[in-house]
Amino acid sequence: MKKKEKEIIVEKKIKRCKEDVIFDTILFIVLTLILIIVAYPLWWVIISSVSAPAAVSGGRVVWLPVGFNLNGYKEVFENDQVVSSFINSVIYTVCGVLVNLAVTLPTAYALSREKFSGKRFITMFYIITMFFGGGLIPTYLVVKGCGLLNTMWALILPGCLSVYNMIVARTFFKSNISEELYEAAEIDGCTQGKFFFQIALPLSGAITAIMVLYYGVGHWNSYFSALVYLSDQDKYPLQLVLRSILITNQTALSQTATTAEARAALQEKKQLIEVMKYSLIIISSIPVLILYPFIQKHFVKGVMVGSVKG
Amino acid sequence: MKTKVNKTGSVQPKKKSFLQTLKKDWSLWTFCIPGMILTFIFSYIPMYGVQIAFRKFNAKAGIWGSKWVGLQYFERFINSPYFERTIANTLILSLYSLIVGFPIPIILALMLNSFRHKRYRKVIQTVTYAPNFISTIVMCGMLILFMSPTVGIINNVIKSFGFEPINFMAKKEYWRHIYVWSGVWQGMGWSSVIYFAALSGISPELHEAAKCDGATKFQLIRYIDLPSILPTATTLLIMNCGSILSIGFEKAYALQNDLNLSVSEIISTYVYKVGLIDNNMSYSSAIGLFNTIVNMVMLIVVNKAADKLSGDALF
Image 1: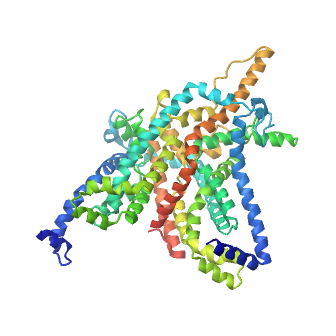
Image 2: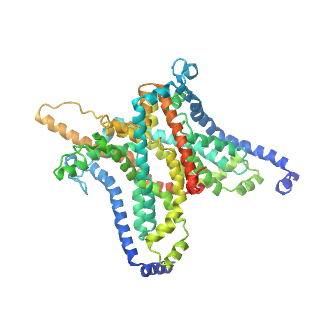
Image 3: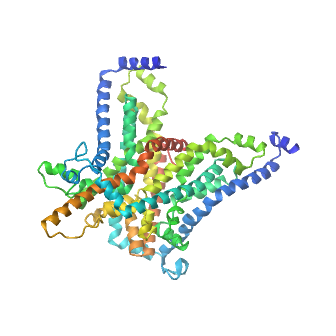
């Protein structure tokens, strides 16, 4: 195998003409530039979150942290609102994903069965919702009518089935759980329900992971439904609290300083809050960051599975 | 015993198997029921409820008890100064996003596909996918922090060259560029995945044969890679055009402030403000419905055009 690879490389070296060398060099430079453009802002957020506040606002943080400390993170953890909304977000994400799975996977499985008599009707039923919808206000009124306003169910139930994700799962079931497998189980006295839970699901770890990640990242990152449906501050998910700190800049800093000392203290506090924002960005991304290597593999797989249908 | 023989036999009569499939289907139908009930409640009832766009909504009387006013709210929207402004802003923003954001992932995928250093390529892919998983709020928070006139890194650079700091977020002429290019930064890696997948499906023999005939790398891309991802690209382009008037609420709303409102007020943010902040439910629904209809017409038109031009229609 290795020998073969070497041969190919040698062959390539021989065949590369002058134009190709120029082409490869340009490609290398351009892609490296893209890499830097994407990576540097992310890197900068990380180093700023652990640098001295004065260095960050003074513009002295460039490649490496300056005056390493974790005060920004301490500030984040001392903020009750951030901590409680972080817990809320975890609860919403976990419950939301469970509901998503409970609804999406059985539907996708049923629609993947070639002989299922409701296939056409149910597929149409879902496709229509992709192109036509009532819009914000009519949906809001329905949620209100169901008495779900200001509860976490308002964030979970309306989007319980994403048609795109369902199609991805359906494609997976279609190509991985064969009809013959069911027929074999049926002869041994297995029902559809039993087959799904005891045979099809255990064989579908990959698609379950993809669904967990697609839906999970969606729940964790969204703020629109929380903004629309939640009114109690103590029910806010993390993204809404982040919004008030990062975007609308609502940090409790309204006192005016009179003496020079107080002014200096205020200045310091202001700088600390800036650093805290960077720490906050990191902390809010931690669940996704930890999962990222894992997520990336599966997300890519999901795109591939989904593209098969097209 | 007899029935089993029947089932496996190829000459079995249709009637019996129909009864059997129906029996089997009951469990499959029950699989679909929870999802259908929830979708019915939260997608189909609102479609019916969209008629409050034609009624003067009265919270006490409910949707059905409110007075029918016909197209009054549509007329009001069309005659209001917000009509031109929100539609123009939405169109410009999404066309700009489309023109910039559509080809870049394709170019990236083509470049990555013909890149020789496999391991370095993996690194580039991993890094460029990462921003896709950052939440909208964090993305906008980063933009605002980076561009802050007092502590932002960009203005620190500008100041170090001896220029005046620029308050980017308050200048409306920068807003669209910020919106679109940050979107490219965030999405280009991830959007390239689907093209990259299509490219890796090309049989290597095609490339080898072309190389034997003395094709340069650029020619390989031009005559083999590009045509083979064209169908994927067309499908995605049609889908994008179908949602040309429905750019996301989240990012535009997060980047809005009073100073850039004249370019940043798009239909979805306006619908939100009219409906839930000013509490004008009927008017807001009318704007939303108008938007949906334009989108559907757009999708049909683009689909027809694509069908005529290349034969790659969506439906």
